[in-house]
Picture 1 (cartoon, rainbow, N blue to C red):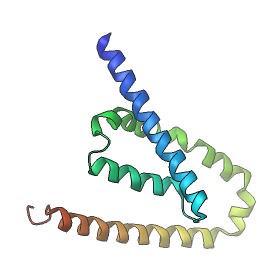
Picture 2: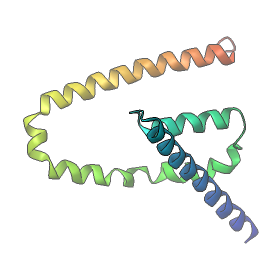
Picture 3: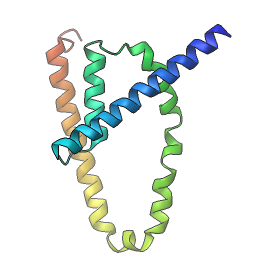
Length: 128
């Protein structure tokens, strides 16, 4: 029972942390008038807070695992939107497909470069 309460507290604390980061990133970007996705900005802040051990990883580990486990359910609204806008998607399919392919390629290359630079910065690249 005590273990269950502890896990529930960590889940609630982790969710609260993620929610506060999301709200703060949205408000901050709105205040600055910057057109940047608040979710990405919030994740950058989250990674920095974890890296500098301001937020202990054990506090958010359970909620992050849970969120990943329900990730497919979070895509249901996307699938409903596809059925609603089927005709528009059908008319612009080549452009949409090109954007998806090019965007995926750019994301993969930039992620690889970023990870390589981070490994150099942390000194983990030489250890392998």
